[in-house]
Image (cartoon, rainbow, N blue to C red; front, side):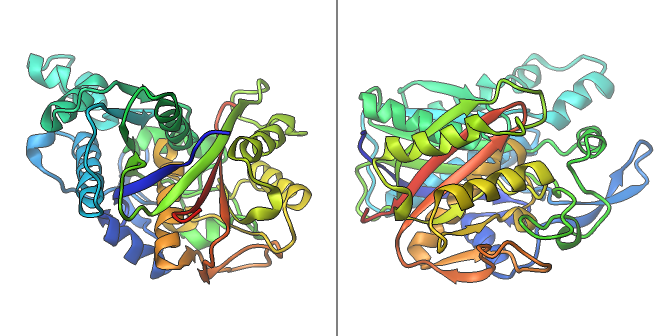
Length: 386
């Protein structure tokens, strides 16, 4: 069993706007971040429900919202951790959880710019560039690496950071998960897959663990964390976790979900805790039939009857490569603020579904994330005193 790693600082850019407190205010308002947004459809005449990150950030950070959001969330996390007593060690590593980087600018490169850009602007499209410039800004010289596991990328990044820290490769890690990829083309194809709901209001289309759910509303986000064991006032502690792969299908979960079960069991074992210690399951919960059925079944099989389950995707949208990072941030902030800002219940629901502002009285949180293509991940979180 490895030692716990503390979440010492948090930064966020989401469909609610720029900043950690903006995210929290949006969650507790119980109002979804998604709005009816125009410019979609093949001819740009369609309006759909999406939770896109609004314009903002520092133009010096890049031409696109992707690089601006990545650096803004990471800076906010570092400033937050510093205020909480964190001092960077000699070896600060950077992990960037990302699936599709600079989607809008790559589209422009091929369609509008005819494949011709200034060399500097072309290099800015590379996934290494925002990482390199960020490391230069702070003088960090630990390893820097991208992590990609589809919707499970945030969990995968957190477990990779923990492995680095446990192994003594670094003294601290800045983890950022960024996904700003809601181009009309990407949204259209997720809708064609039958998992994204774009033509209904969020609570009508996305109802995880409730009757009538049709899938998820798509969202964007960038979330930053500082991970260390040298802070005076951490939010929460990462006790352990596990990852596995279904090796079954490019989109669907194995109907018997043996590898998802194994991932949950190995996460608890790695963290050195019992299922009876878990009070909350912060689920992947996209509102699709197969994912919700899988997580609800495991909840019933593995955890006590008083373990609550919730998903914030009806509020934040499904933020793809940044989804689990947004949800980890919600759990960590919830420990400090004593409440889980779960979405309201709008239909007949699983009896263990949490809804509205639910008080947190300690206890452990299991954060699951099931990435498209078979990527399974489970992280075990606890209050900072755990």
